Length: 280
Image 1 (tube, rainbow, N blue to C red):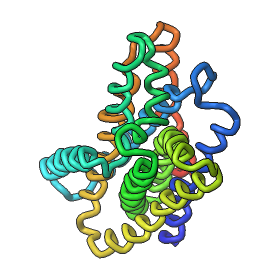
Image 2: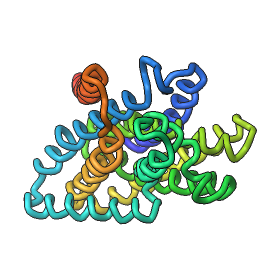
Image 3: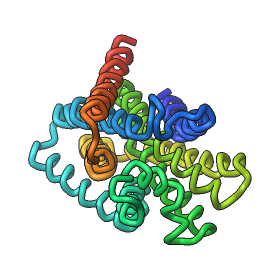
């Protein structure tokens, strides 16, 4: 039963996030000037990831027999590990922001929003060329999705409720990035449907990671608290090193309030999902 739940949740997080991203783009949402823009989606995702890590995964890990010192050490090692993966551009999320800064210097000084949106579409094109850029995106996505699958499985092995929360958080932070991935792939190929298929296949790797995680964690049940700490380190790293830096821009008071509201909304969603899963 747990394995079935893991497969369903990882498919929903991996492939569902791709389809949701494509739907938002088709509806014209997520662009500049929309009521729901990229900044709002990033804020929502950051809130969901932070709430999941600090309010659910870490408390569950610390309720075990594992020592606090060992768990904090695991959390630290995990953050450093994901930093190194990010440097190798294998932990896909994060490189959009670095290229956005490069793009920002080539545009007008105050054209920050355009630089960010433009970077998602052209970052790989400038650095890798159209063909390699598409494969770079798919490679990074596949590795990241496989890791997400293992982390979701770890949460499910601890508690079904934790698994659902982790899957929702993964889905939330994948949507805005898959929108950027689709833009990149549509530039490398005029066939929009093929771009959707390619990103969906990368997203499906999440389910593969979930199955591997199920058997891996099952064999190493005593190390489950440490798996939860590693999952937390992933969520914290993505939120603080990738998502939030993309939100650090000069904004009006109204835009700043909107960012904070969407950040809180992400935390509230995680809380509501937790309550619903616990009641069920």
